[in-house]
Every structure is written in structure tokens, then in C-alpha cells.
Image 1 (tube, rainbow, N blue to C red):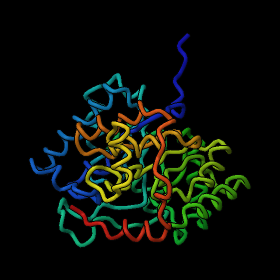
Image 2: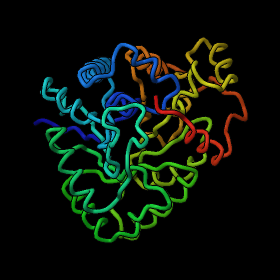
Image 3: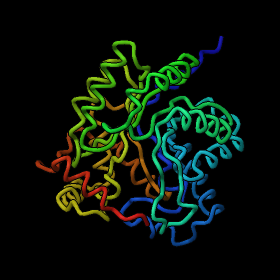
Image 4: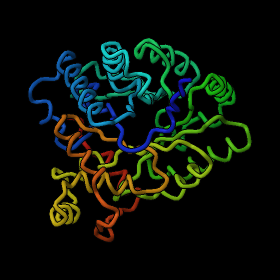
Length: 318
């Protein structure tokens, strides 16, 4: 008798495709990574190379979104080329933003947010078509305090139907009010008014403010994925956090590996995403798996949440 794999049992580092499904992104130095070309064919090859490297390294969680340009399509094509791999992978994707940059890095607007049920219905079908089947996890993209989604009973009922069909439904959170959004969604789910059992949120050594709320949802059985583990490149050798860079050098580590290890060591984390744009960056990120919990981080790295998110908003698409 064959035992069916539980896709939500996956743990460790996952691969996020935000930085490679489109030519522009908000990562420090991102444009330098694409010096060899950023056409559709260039990024398809880059994405497939990253997926091959991640697979070979034992990474079994892949994250995409409708707004990540052609990330879902690239992933779906890769799955078609490797038909035995889908059963061993856990795939998460997100709906609620539409990519609008038309493959331009200098676009005034790169993505437009809309959490209406009409957008959900359209994008769910687009996700199915691109991936060749349903993802294991499907999230409302960037459910912030001002989103109408938590008050939209029709949308919540539709998401509950999707959850009943076996897809783990949840949302991604962003901004300084992540914890408040998590707690409200947890209360709605506990009351039977929402179907959420997964979340993707930002936690890193500069912005750990959602940690207690993430611990609460994890304790309630939610699947927790952490994004922006290296703070859009700030927590790398390219970044501006010199005290972390110094600590990494002292420990004989790459700065990004130390930053990502700090995420992996949080007890509420199921998957910590690498947002690598190159295979070398992925391998450096994966060094986090070998970092002992005994490695100490400099004290006082955390920033005031509103200051952190203001700095993130000021990053340039390159």
C-alpha cells in the first residue's frame, strides 16, 4: 500500500519566484543580476535553472503568485518537463494582484491590487491553467488592514468551498499591522466565519513584530511561510546592515545565510522563503540550513515597524 504524501508536512527553505517571473523587482541590486538579459526566454531559462538547482538541493516548496509576471507559467512548464516531480513538491500561489508592467522595469505601476470575488474567480482559473492543476496552498495576496476581504462574506464562502476541495486557503500579510490582521483572521476562523489555515508573512531580524501573532496561528494549526527573510536584499552583503555583515564574517558565514537561519530557527516557521534571482544566491541562502542555533546575532537589530515598512516602500524597482 502506497502512503500518500502530506504536502503540508514540508519544512525548511522554500523557493520564491517573485524576483524571476518578471524583469523588475524591489531587491537591492536586482538589476545587476539581470545584466545578461531579461526577455521572456531569458527569465524562463533562469527560473528553470533555479528550480533545477532547488530540486537538486532538496527544496520541496515553491511559491508563486498571479502578479509575479509569468512565474506560474514558467513553473507549470517546468513541471510538465519533469512529470514525476509534482507529487513531491508543495506549491503555493497567491491571487489578488494583477501584473500591469507589461515586462517594463520603468513602469509607473507594476501591479494592481483587487480583492474582489470577481478577481478571485478569474485568477483561480488563470492559476489552474498556468500550473496545469491546483496549487496546494492558495493565498489572498497582501491582506492588509484596509482590505475588504475579511468583511466580504460571499468571498469567504467561496474560499471555504475551495478549502473543502482540499486546497489550504490563507493569505499573505504585509505592513506594520501584520499582527492585527493575523489576530482578526484567526478569530474569524475560530468562529467558523473564515476558512483560513495558512499564512505567508514577513519576519526577519529587522522586522520581527509579527512573531507573537505567527506563533498563535501556528499553535492553532496554520501552515506558516515566512517571506522577505533577507529584507529585499538589505540583509545580504549588498545591504546596509553592517553589524549583521560583521557578525557573519566573524562566524565564517554569508550574511544572507545568517539572516535566513534566524528565520528557520523560529519555532513558528514551517517554510522560510529564498527569493534568489540566481543559482549562486540560492546556494548561498541554503547555507542557512547548516547554521547552528548557537550562533549569536547582534542585539538591537530590529527597527520600528513603520520605519521598516517606509524604507521598504522606498525601494526602487530595478
